[in-house]
Length: 452
Image (cartoon, rainbow, N blue to C red):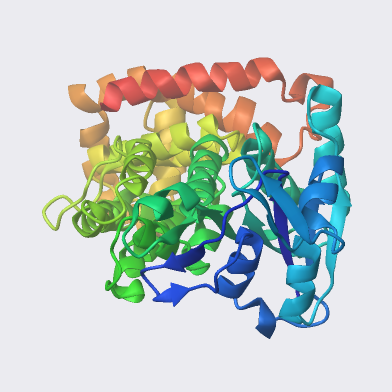
């Protein structure tokens, strides 16, 4: 079972007594000078187990003024000497089932000391830890350090940030009930996770992290932060889950070169439909998520919807090839574009692109630039030969052949075959080169401009 880890910084100030609360849950802590006590009560740390742990970061001054159990009195700068119990004794009296370890840190006055604090924190973490941060008394840059550490440890030690809180004592002083609110800062790091996940999809074509976030109940912290307390979690998260699922289906179509799926537009239509559903659900709920979803959607806006009256969209094949090229899926880009042009040619020629013999013969006509009897000798092609001969001589088909022929020949012979045979069948002259990839990009751009 993953270990729960509470991490807090203890300062050296003279702390006043207060009660801390979370109005959304009705939680109110015992009166205490130390927000650490209140936060542990809020986290129900008494229900944790002996495998869990708390780390309290302390400077030398914080140790002598606020930590040691030997502390029994402190002098207030106005009121004079008062009874004052150190945090070590306070936590000891809570009888928590896990140890609380003081971690000595430097004052953080320069970069060396900053990195020393970072390393001291990091070395105490274990693989898979569940992290609970209290930032109330984190001085200067420590909150930033904690956010960076959280992402660093998530990557290297597979940890998960479960809570980031701040006890706002100053606000409590102004309230009639004198209860200082515990503020949940987790939505900030969750928004960062959504941002990174979206960037990974847009830049690298990797949707895995986005899928993980939709399965991790990642929206509730944002909902709580925006005061949406009574919204059913599943009702809110399902639209986003369905949108991510539609994106995954689209990526699968492109990565696996599922040409019929790309051209019939079902995945494109689903992305657009689910995007609209997400916008309708989230416009007034999780506002910071909306720009992220919009940016993802922008990367697919060039794909066109299909309808029952226009069930095949050739442009989508070109857009899919470009998407693959932009995400370094060069073999998929070549294959999709080559086959997409063949499909378009079949439609112009009047042959059925779904029948292998007709498709193969049509592709041969396109690559050779003329009708050859031997390409149409198959008995299955007998009934369409005359129609094809007439169509092949039409100005529209001839213009298309002139426009596309040499590009198709290049795709098929000079690039696709090199990829499919790992550059092993034509000697050194048959080796695929970076120049080939650059040329592929130019040809994709040219053909996309034609279809747009």
